[in-house]
Image 1 (cartoon, helix red, strand yellow):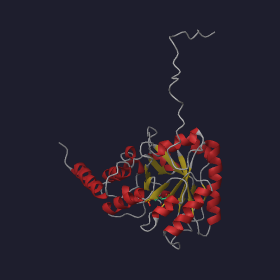
Image 2 (tube, rainbow, N blue to C red; image 1 turned 30 degrees about the vertical axis):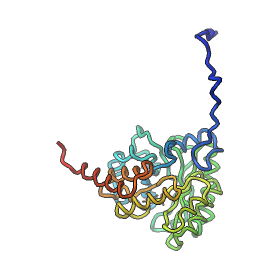
Image 3 (cartoon, rainbow, N blue to C red; image 1 turned 120 degrees about the vertical axis):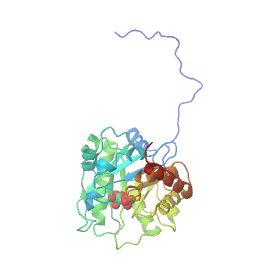
Length: 297
Ligand code: R5P
């Protein structure tokens, strides 16, 4: 028999109404606690935004420049990312389990750069995503591609499995060589991902009409980085994307192929979370790069 609870007077805070606040992320108020908790690990509740570091390139193109040794190059950057986006192979072999940030694991794959990239299959069982304690799974969707329907079905199957486990799905809008990268196309692709259940959508920035892409997508959109640009241009692109409605970025080569990846990821975070202008963020990048190069002592 437990002891009676006779310790002092109880306080039910009768003057304080129970919280009824909506969840902070667009389109995400109706999810279960576990899924919302995972989303709140990826997106900072204080800003509603995320800096994801994409390092999953090896799943179709092998040892990408800057990712030859993930175990060496990525752990120093990881504390500055809200989430790492990577394969389960990289996670298990090259990221210490003491990593405390969110993990978004690649869940589709199959073809290499030697073949038709749109011919992907699901490459991860949701049980394994649970085992790795990930915050979301990522799947490529090839709207307009040769294997459009298969890739959409990969996503919808993962969404169904994700709801069973409380794990959100990041739909990545892939752009093939033959597809026009404009707001009309990206608006189509992002909306399809969201309508069919993706809880987050990743897409490219376009200078004309990006605000219509984000407005037309009922879930958070994160901006993909794309090929390596000069740092100021990449910071400007990130700045415009968040100003035009993106809930953050998921950048890879523009961070890990920078002259100073550690300086660049902090500069990107200053834009995404701190509201820094591209110029201020670039100054920060140069300062951090120079201090890293300065001889010790
Ligand atoms: C998208 O196709 C994949 O997730 C890529 O491996 C990754 O996101 C590309 O990142 P970035 O274009 O910024 O290097």
